[in-house]
Length: 188
Image (cartoon, one colour):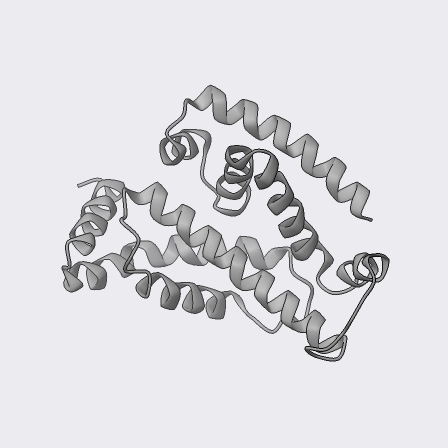
């Protein structure tokens, strides 16, 4: 049986409450989750508090705890996994920034906040902020970036997750990349 079909079948069984399906699923997806985490970690600064395996483990804990998710297929699973890994890294970066700036009680002007955001893990925080802004303007383009860039999904898989055509994904991807580059450049 094709591994992609096996993963989808196990996800659907897990949806229906089969806990043993989760046990059989994890060995099949572990390698891909590790590759996904490695991709994320390549962009992080040296000395980052998380290592690739720790990011996989944290994502795994959150995935197991996400009983409300109704898994559709393999692509959906890895899209959710990519989103969780992104959230974990952003949370770590924001916590580090918060500690660096004195904890909970820092009051900053907007100008100071822009300077601070650029100081600790600027890439992940700035990209997260830019993606949030893009999501307010065009949710689908934001999702395309998340799935393609962070999730490592190809055009076909992204189209499947979003329920649109591959051509729409390619168009959204091209526009979103240009918009994000301008937005990130503007934030500098």
